[in-house]
Length: 287
Image (tube, rainbow, N blue to C red; front, side, top):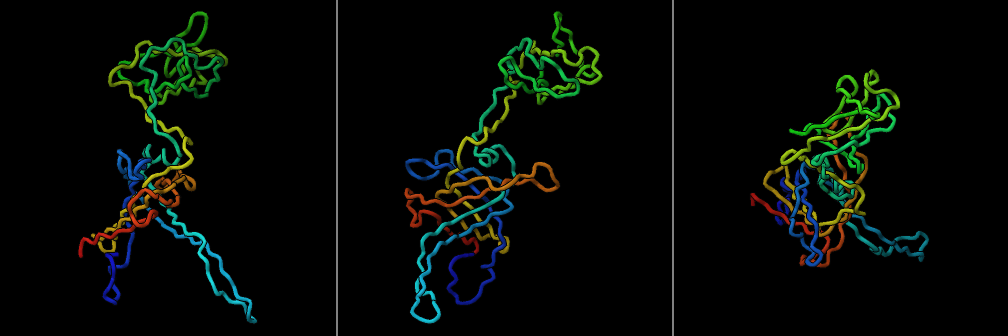
């Protein structure tokens, strides 16, 4: 698609083997243009599709033996789009889950005394480690951090890793072994952090809080690169889109996981373009 073909003859450069990039930006409420954060590249996109849906009403004449259509009324037009991304970073997860991206304040930067793991342990089960306020604790493998796991009794009994429990320090998960020596079924269990993480060892976590937005809205740029004739670039500028998740995500499988999005192009009355919905511009690098 190098531009207008005024030659009157076929041109193989007009064949398209689609590749491209997708950029998304939040809109400034006053200008209708991308806000100060600019466009974010959504990463590799295996698929991008566009649809144009037209709703019409057809009037038929009844004056002859066989009715025929004598007028077609166009009632509505809508541009839809759908795409996949296969880079499952937290920005893309946040958009897919209509969520907000946050940073989780890992509470292991303070000492913790006698936080209850379980008041009645079931041997063989996994438990989350939480502080006395109920907040999850992660990264117990942080350099310099010291913690203990204890059986809750009149005099607490120190438990031994490998003998009484196994632990995933990074995720803050603990499992009491069926063969435990120093704790029995139904006993209480506690944990303590006696030396807290400091400085570079805090290791807070990226977090997505799902379903905090009804939809994802913004300006979308699809920059098409024609693999049939590299150098041709076509910019599809959707001045305002409304996006939602579309379909399932395979989190276990033998194919690369993808996040699927579907959306519609909305009118953005604030932009200067002739079309307030979609503008297509061609950049022919070989002209």
